[in-house]
Length: 214
Image (cartoon, rainbow, N blue to C red; front, side, top):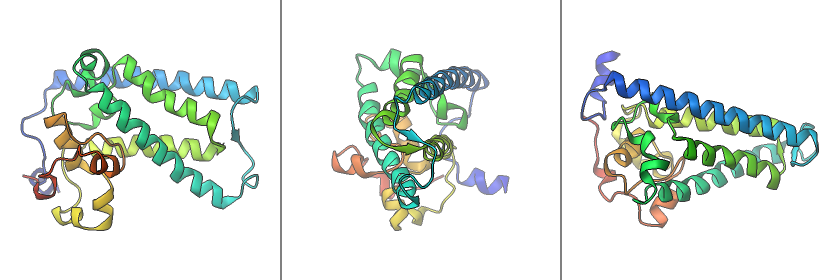
């Protein structure tokens, strides 16, 4: 098992314990920011200021599923444009450098955000709860999906075979290899879940489909 994963490694250099420690420190900071954001959302919900609801039948089960997909699309769009903005030379050092400090992506760097970026990431969930009717289950499911997907794309090894990119899921969903290229080249691959915006706006690496893991 270990040998198989090693053969799928996407890393060009070994991990440093000091980098992992710093990633963990930033991840804890990000968790605190998201916790504060969660407390704010619940507080606003109790005052009736959000569009969150608890009755599964209020909009029907079909809307529960559709709203989950809508949130992922909205979050991916929001993430793409703020992520691309974070890489502007004038703000990169204080907005996004912490996430790239370790060089190679790792599960620990998946939530390693500098304070301004952590706030920007958390603001999406606060904002969407005011503009889209969402069941609490949908909001929690989106948070879990974001966390799991971020870890998956920062694993540092490819779970799926190279041929995965040729199937419909691989053509639209971002995987470990796709995001590893971003950590090396910076100016490509800004999406969170989907390849749509990278394809549409020309920020997908032309050589991606020919990339193979080591």
